[in-house]
Length: 301
Image 1 (cartoon, rainbow, N blue to C red):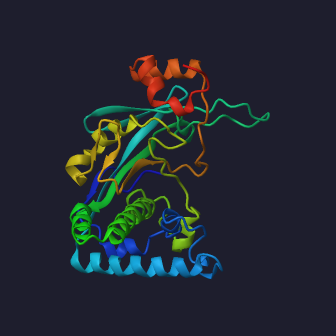
Image 2: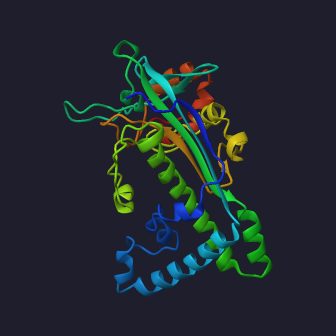
């Protein structure tokens, strides 16, 4: 489906009160080493009371953050015409020309008839007609340093850690919220979607948003392409370190795939043949490529 709005859209100040409704609290409890899904965790005979206490503390701080507007959430997304090039890469078209995205394919032994997946499989080749791909970056960490310094000045390490955890949850909520806006408005392929927050958490919607550096696209260096494509630093204030970590840390970025069959998967271990081919396609040395893909190498270097 042709998107309702192609190109880049910037969100300068996403209301935190809106993002609060999109928070997935389960990972929040995991960050405090409390195992269990929200809200069922409150009924757990072992950790339930502790979970309630931490949850209440978090919401007191979140109330204060929203009231004082001490955190700012920003985002940018873009939707572009795109087609699969060869087997594993995607070419997208911008106002300034073409951009290549490079992906990796599973190489594990599978049962007959089960394909080895690559994210490029979810984008149509040119002969099948024009297709589309999206990209995004969001942060809810603008202002977090000041909050943390204030708590640390008062020797309140607990609240400082809590503020960081809340910012992380808000950033993930911003990614969830923006994906919803893309599906229902900007791209519009799911305009009638009416999922609850639990439905969003369970990913009952069409489409995925895999992030560079994660299992389906484990190469962190592809963030450089994403950041240039969306002019992320200018539009959101998020920067990349030399190791391709995002700053502020309470940030999320990734790609949008809308194909009904698109799904998350781990690339897993890959062979030297694919590493050499990937290095050639990206114009990187074998050593550079092996460095960035070291967790995925299926051979000794």
